[in-house]
Image 1: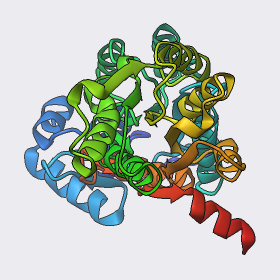
Image 2: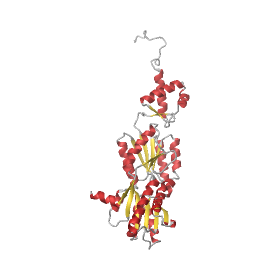
Image 3: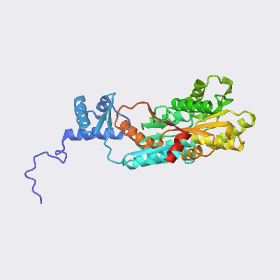
Image 4: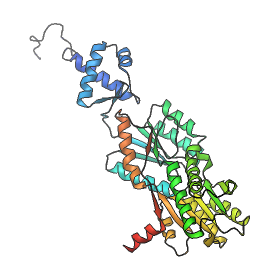
Length: 372
């Protein structure tokens, strides 16, 4: 039988606990359970510890890197014991640019030790909402949303915000979200200037129509890409009558753009100087098919956005009406989104709008690169 004669009277199994360590762990567990930053006042009320104790514990944890302090003086747990999990609602597996973004993200998380849950939004608002709800149920640490429906965007964003999960929205702004994507107006403006330059160099500046293939459901900020394109043409070629600028909704989809351009050309069989600014390369390729079906390649110049491989191949084809595209540098998406996500989770201040680099790619540039 064990001899307990040396055990101090009244000592229990809790007597060896260190009170300040227990309080520190209580505060860390509280922060770990929260998805959003917490104030000192809230921690004080929820733990019952003195404000001095709460303050000193937080300062120590912040110094050692277990919590981070935001610019608003709030605190967030940043040293989660398990691997970070991000949820990604991809635009659609059927959209080449969306698949390129997904590939860039997968490569970035593979080198960061982050788990990425990818769900296909199928270019459909209802599906995107369902996927967002699934990611919320999975209790991911952060959600990356890539979907085009402006009507469902506030609903998705509200549900994610209510769950206390940070949100990054790719290319399509969402309430409560940090934006990452192209500067739509500027990218469009440069595409329009390229079209105007082509008309000046090849048609003596004569233009019968300027057609913008838009994406109406994505909202005004995204539509500013086509606004910029039309402005770019008008600035360089101010003599074109305003009634010769036409916007048509192609939904960013190849088949829809093919149909609207076929109808547009059929109503104007004799016009020979038509500029087409497409919202995406997918839209541009649909327009190209329509132009070829009508045998009007020599009468049309098309500029897209995205820099897809198929678009590049078309740019070097003899007699192609594809005269350029705007690269959104999709290879930058994954690394920069992950860097942005980690900054958000660490409580750092990040800009509300984060733009990718973009650059205009012309036929001449592609041909020169292939000769090199």
